[in-house]
Length: 130
Image (cartoon, rainbow, N blue to C red):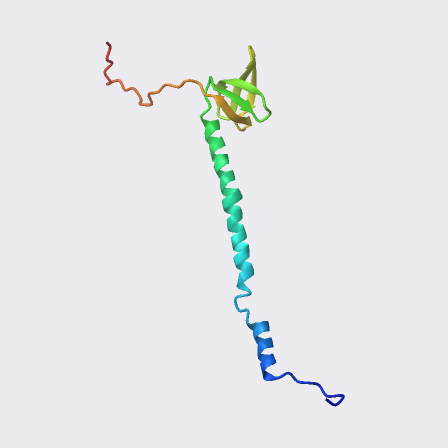
């Protein structure tokens, strides 16, 4: 080939080059799908279990009653002696009572005995004696 001339690509190589460069119509969609998949995995692996644990903790804290033995988030063991709307009164030693916020109760160690009958007693109910 004489100097100064530029070799032009043949028709075949131009077609292959065009397919490689512009043939990725779905290429713009792939990153979006990967991000959506990542958020889906994060939701099911991290967010949902945390919400479930939070609901269980709130339910446990709302059902506290006197006589329950509990552990606070600080690791202090005590027995519930009184319950208010936002606070719980714990007896941590004989004669020593402390007041804690309800969310400070981490778990219930032993629940107090509760009556088994959940039906309200009406005045019309008959009392049967043996």
